[in-house]
Length: 456
Image (cartoon, rainbow, N blue to C red; front, top):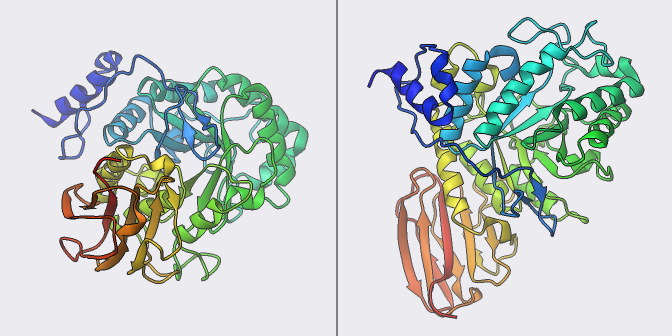
């Protein structure tokens, strides 16, 4: 089947209206799996679970957030291109996309040449035509049953974005802007809001709070978080805000070049810290190392995702250079790590991930955890009834596991390869003593499940 027909075939599954556009575009030579279907029963809005530990859909089913960083979508893509991007990510099991609502720079426009405010930079004068295009994207994402996580005004790490503009606008105009956004988008149940943007609030604290409160006053059902600076979380900087529904963590790895501190903690360190806070909020890995940027790889993005989830998280956001939507963005959709995030999602969606509790003791993983602060550190998570433990090893090694700590009558060790989702039986044991377990191959990372498979 020709490549252009492949695209139309995929989009036929998601919306019949695309046939009218007749836009022929080349895509990657890898065929996108045609798994996108129209969901007739909506699953939004998202809510917090009753215990506040994770996100759930409107039917109270646990929602494992699997996001892609599509920050510049509104400013680089036309609607037909945005539909191709969203449909492709949906086919890869991504259920959320992160975008910046405003252009990257205050004097910028969207792909149609429309500025968000008239006059430019005046938060009290939104340009309706600009936000109409945003609605088109949100509507199509809703059709695919995808969440759109929107940053209202990106602060930026290095005084290159909207920090100065929103500070000059002041509290009243920022609250007015928040009210406008809430009123405009409250009819969409597939929206999350992310305040901030790669910065801890300093002088911007008051205007960010006013903007957040403005949105919440008019769209109270839409959940909200805050994107702080790397190595910090939402609750580090806005811990007591009533509008902060869930937290985002953000970190890279120790020794990463080009960041503000060489003491950058590992993702699991930030996640475990967030998990142990009182009161505890549900949290996601909002941002970490991107796959094809300096220091990144498929293995790095895999371990970040596994580390975060098994340290108490509720999902996270995968990142790559796709976020900029350069000319080669279609090819970049099929980076190895993106395809493996699909496997990550499938692996954990078949497990009670939302029940796992991180275990930093040596009671179950007796030997072979690795060194705290290093890339080789293994994380352990256990079900409350102790009938299963999940151990993620970012590097291969033989480990010693106390199977006597697993409740049950017949304990099975199961190795899962995060790169392929292939499974290998590691043995069956009585729940007694310490067992030495070695992965099938000694290359890169493994997930080990040790659980009861017998009768109670």
